[in-house]
Amino acid sequence: MAWRRSPDSLIQLFADALPDDSRIERRRMFGYPCAFTGGNLFAGLHQESFIVRLSEADRTRAKAQHGARSFEPMPGRSMREYVVLPDAILTDRRKLSSWLRRALDYAGDLPAKSPKKAKIAPTKAKSAQLKQVR
Image 1 (cartoon, rainbow, N blue to C red):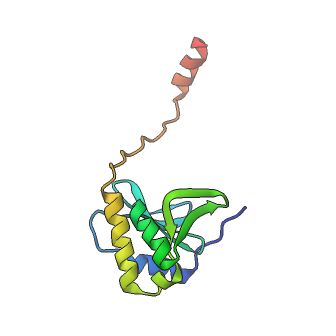
Image 2 (spheres, rainbow, N blue to C red; image 1 turned 135 degrees about the horizontal axis):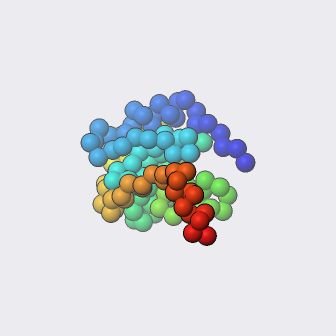
Image 3 (cartoon, rainbow, N blue to C red; image 1 turned 135 degrees about the vertical axis):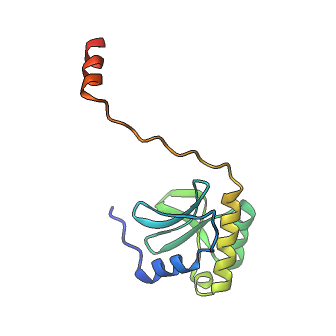
């Protein structure tokens, strides 16, 4: 199943809506714009969805009061702490800023992830050594 590119308008909204905060690192994940803090994803796009990572209380509130839904990148594969923000929030800049701030603060309180070490391919000499050992 091929994923669809996010609409340009949603990409622009995402870029404009992120708070100006030095803790934020913008990068792509699976080709979609995302925002991280301490190595933890707190907001991003997936196809036509604007997703945020929230505490359990905030997820419950977003669902009950605004109609947010659990994020499932593939049917039946829910990402536990993430919700898709509904249009009612996306079209209200003040509400969107508030939910992004909640997501940033929640992810900012999580333990930071250490950077992954790059995998280095063995040199020819090391490969020859490994073959002799076997």
